[in-house]
Image (tube, rainbow, N blue to C red; front, side, top):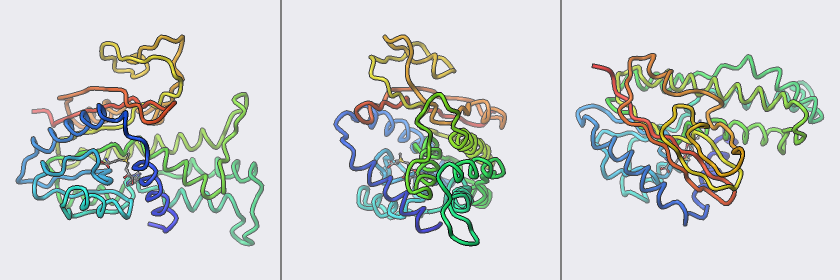
Length: 301
Ligand SMILES: C[S@@+](CC[C@H](N)C(=O)[O-])C[C@H]1O[C@@H](n2cnc3c(N)ncnc32)[C@H](O)[C@@H]1O
């Protein structure tokens, strides 16, 4: 992993940990209970894998079987986890999308002429990158190789799926030396659209890699980010997250954290059935509430 990429992930983690967590109590209780249930239900005779393990804020490592491996590309994540949980777990620091290095290289090629180093103006560079992105197909090869070699019985996906798009955006902004997104809602932002499509491919490829070992899956992720400030609640379960949200206002200003990818149909295709599904609202910061989705699945029969 390149130095700028690991620095970026470390900074994101620091920013996450520095946030005011006073309103996080309900989220932390629910996410720890959900992931804790996954760890307790795990077959201790088979390896367990925790993806997006981070600093262990959301992961009750004391419930993790002995052969549990953490996976997070933030170079400090394992140390933070050791400080928090007094456990020096085996760890993998690879990129879970398998595509960030190519994305970073494409962004650099778009921003500056490779032959002269001359920086292109922002519009030209943005158009160039928007044109390059469709040829990039993130492939989580290290994850697939790990799963094939170790055959985990349980995989926890601990709030990392919704980060793929965020990290991709930060990476592009770093290469451009600032946000290249168009602020005029009347204009089509080709780069933003192309990056959203890249994120969708990354999410789909990642989900497609998980079921290979026949493991039970416990996934927690941001399903949506809500920016408007009206009172929000959840009605009876609806598969479509936008219909699950109830608000007092005429419409909710929310963005899809998974680039429009529907998680369950992808996993169901691999013969997995849902054993738990829940959603809750996490007030992450003023003006930013996340709709969190927790899904547990196991192989049918
Ligand atoms: C919201 S945090 C999850 C926090 C974590 N579950 C905990 O208990 O502390 C997202 C984590 O995903 C990691 N991450 C984001 N994108 C990643 C990627 N492409 N590959 C590997 N890890 C990634 C970040 O480093 C961060 O630790």
